[in-house]
Amino acid sequence: MCLECDGYSYEQAMLELDLLIQVHGWALVQVEGGDATSWSYTVGLTENYGHPELAMTTVRLELQSAVIHRLVDDIVETGHLDLDLVAERELELVEVHPTRFVQEWFGTWSNRYERPPAPGGFLQIVPPASWFCECHASATPRLDRPGHGPDGNRATRRRRH
Image 1: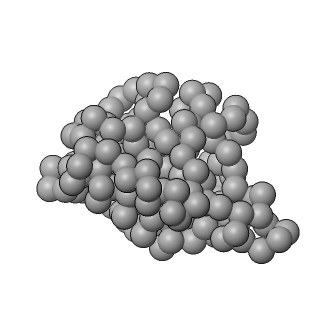
Image 2 (image 1 turned 135 degrees about the vertical axis):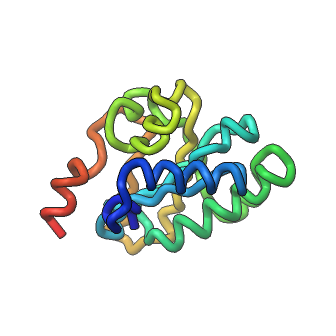
């Protein structure tokens, strides 16, 4: 859950993020909606490991967290992703389209660095169709294509829930 939604001030939330990055070299930001509208992304991989940040959408936040943590473990240990693991899990990595950076997808990252990410700064982890039922197999938003932002702004999402 968002720290600000839990009562932290913006400044407190950013201090918490900064502390996580100082201790671990990176932090995971998770934006809660329904399972289909939640997303997660890293902050700090570029700064501390010279690696593009990672983002994932659509599946449960717990699964997003587990996948991202597993991939980041390799980045922290070796400096790069284990592409054999990515292939073994049938994941696809795609470069996030620059138009997504001016939308609300990566707000905490942009707030921390006081600018939008650079082109090539984020990779989306696209889960395989086999993780979904037949009717939702193509439900993952593809951030490598220009398009609309996430499911409304934070206030709109809160009103819906």
